[in-house]
Image: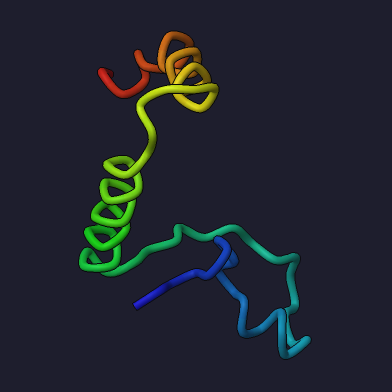
Length: 72
């Protein structure tokens, strides 16, 4: 299931033009199986990338700047 699509907590009312207040942001949620499927997809993509070239240089630069976020 997908809830609060695009973080729009009252999407149905907004789309039906019957909301009486400004649109509000809501917490989006998904099924754990969807999350696990995304992880599998990202791992599969990563395993098939070439280990050389500009792409890996870019990934290394991003890791140097942002890698600490993953360790927090």
